[in-house]
Image (cartoon, rainbow, N blue to C red; front, side, top):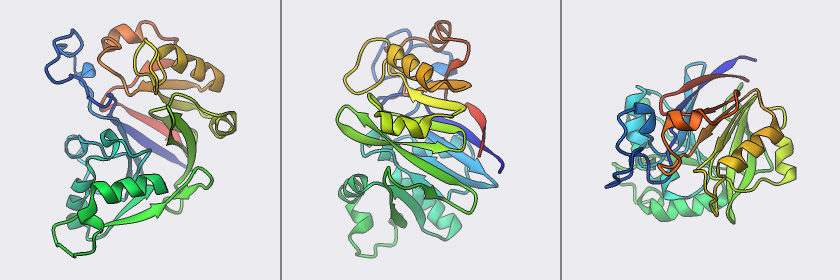
Length: 260
C-alpha cells in the first residue's frame, strides 16, 4: 500500500529526562539522546499527520518537528503525561479551519471532559480548542483515512486498560505491564515493535528491561525500540551496549519508516 514515517516526539517517562532538580549522571548528561520529552509519536503519510498522545510537551514537540498540519490525536489512556497538551491543538484549528479529530475510549473521554471541561461545556467561548470526539475500543479497527487503518490493542498498565496501536507492520506499546494472549495475536507478525521499558528494576505498572526483552523475543519483530525510559535506567549509550542486535533505544527525534 505504501510507506509511512514514524517520528518519536518523546521517549521519556512521566517526569521526562532530565528530572527537575535531579543531579544524577543521566540528568546531567550533555548527550541529546539522554534528554527525553514525554512519550508520543507522529505518524506521517501522504502529507497527513496524526499523533499518538499529546502530553505536556506537545507544543514543544510540534515546534521542534515543524509540524504545520495535524489531522488527529489518538489517546492511549488518560494519565496526565499523555493528554496534558490537548489545549494546544487550537493552533491547528486556527490555521486549518477545522475541528481536531480525537480518538479515545469511553474511559479517556470521561477524563478529557473532566480535565478540559471548558472545551465541552457548550458555552461557545471563542478561544477554546475545537475537537470532535471519536469513540474507539479494542474491538474495532480505526480508519483514519482511505488508506490509513489502525488496529487498537489492549494492554494493562497495572490494572488500567491502555490502548496500544498497530499500523501496518508497526506496533506501538506504551505503559504496559501485561498483555493477554488474545491481544498478542493482534501483534504477531509485527516487523517493527516499540515497547515501554522503564528501567532495569521491576515496576508495578511498566515492563522493566528483562520483561520488555522477553516480550520482544516472544513477538519476534525484525526490529524493536525501547521507549518510556526513566532516568533510573541509565545513559542511552550504556543501555544500548546491553541490548540484542535487533533491539535499540529510541530517542527524541528518531525517525523510522514503516510498511502499511
